[in-house]
Amino acid sequence: MKLSSFAIATFLALLETSSPASGFCPMPASGVRSTGTSLYGYLDDLSRDLSGPDPNPVPEDESREATRMKDEDIDRAGPGSWDSYVEFNEFDGGDGQMGVAGDGNSKLEKFDMSEMAKSKTMSAKNAWGTNTGYADTLRDRGIDTQRAQQLENWHNQQEVLNQRKTQRFMTEQYDQVATDDDNWRNLASFGVERTQDFDLDQTFGSVTVADKIEGTIELNGRMNGPYATYEFGLKNPFMGFADFRAAFTPETPKEFTVEPSEGALRQKEETNFIVKFKAQNPGVVEGYLVIETEDFKKTWKVVGATS
Image 1 (cartoon, rainbow, N blue to C red):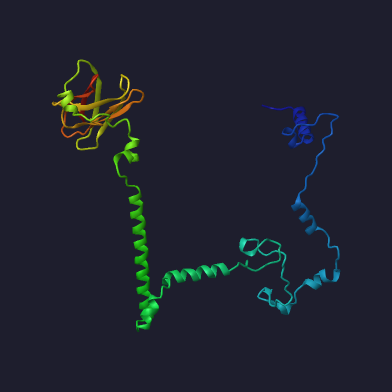
Image 2 (image 1 turned 90 degrees about the vertical axis):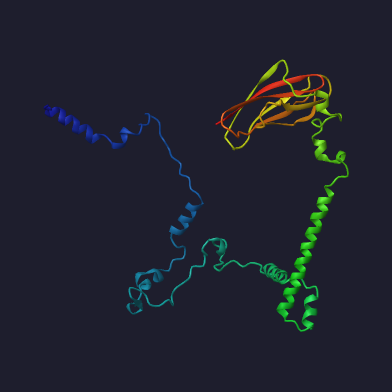
């Protein structure tokens, strides 16, 4: 493809008149003047003061001849004498241990050591044991000072041990109660405990399956592994409390257990039952759980499988 000389000349003219930034920066509208405001801070003021001219200049001291080190004072391309060295005391490091930058303190911070010394003294005293006079008595009898102090420390340790045992005993005795009625743990379980004292097995007879099955409880566990559990709640469908018995039919395998096995059902609040299955043999086992009171009987089929 050939370009004419006119096209080449036009392209070069446009390239000379255009600016690289014009392709990226929008041009201001005609008749509108843009102004900028420079903002300066504290560091800019410090820079201006450091970079500014000396208010009291001494040209003789700042000349090259005055600041040039003499040849006889140069040692291995460095200063051979530090007599004219002036230390700059305005900055002290600014690292925590050197205080605040610019406070003129170029040494380590000073702390009040009186409390620290007092603490060390008390620790040393406690390490040797409190002075009860027993060690002095042993020293008067001719026993070595170090051995006498060791014996006193041992007696002090036994005294502290006896005090701790006494406090533990008093704490345990304080938690003891005279009767079960005063035991807060039993009071906290009120509602699950039975309300009447009679023989449930004699009253209800043998455990038999009801006419209606409420549902099936399926549990799956590992052989000789942890219990597989199932929880459910049950209320008393009648008014007040009713003593219950929760048990399995005689043919139900012993791998099944239920908690609680007896107590009182409430009308307004559910009683939680936990059915457990511990797999002991391979295969599937079945049985029936029966919860009954004097007024009703409910039955669930339980199925346990070994995985």
